[in-house]
Length: 280
Image (cartoon, rainbow, N blue to C red; front, top):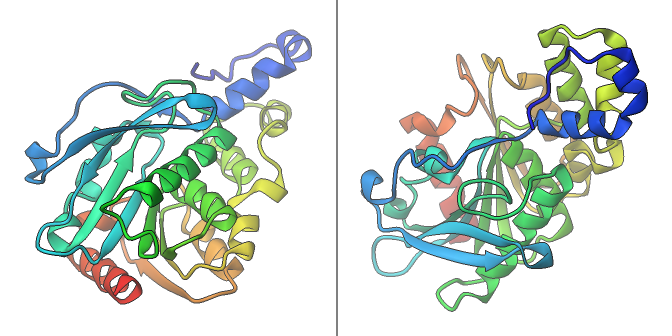
């Protein structure tokens, strides 16, 4: 369901649950359209399916590292639009750099069953980590997670709860607060202030924010954010970086737009070096 801000006061009073669903719906824009394939990106891709919470079937692509022995395995958590086929170019360069990759669709995206929710996609990420750890061709002690936009916020929460074997967390263009970023988006869209406050009331509170997860994080973190990001302002990335108390790196991209980091060869190289150093 897509939210429209033209709700009447009577509907607001009668259906607070609907408002909560609308607020969460602002974060999810899935579809089932095929945008590209692993073969179209010049990499080997194998369809995989694994169980999410309550047995929800989740679909992904396994992209094995090219060469003899992989340096490690990367779990990719994509942004809020479309499905993995749209986000595949962000990580299709990693197998040639020596890393195996699992990229998958959250519930309700692409070929995955179910309906997305903000807490549910965190559970899906943890299910993907569990799936990776039981694969015979994965060294469960040499893992990294890359999360972009919604996937970055999701990754921060998932890894803060379950970091076994994860040596590096890469966060690109992520937000620090569900209510904060929703209120910023609502203000841009122009709904009345009272309606915006009602819409965000049922979103995860500060205790479940990526910012709170960042403060609990034990894994090394690399935070990336462009200063021309018109979707999620760079101040969110800086807040996440500040909250991380362990080893951390920052890549601020001058002129960088939303999740365009991995389309830049120089940023890919910096990330490759960080992954190699962490997983070696």
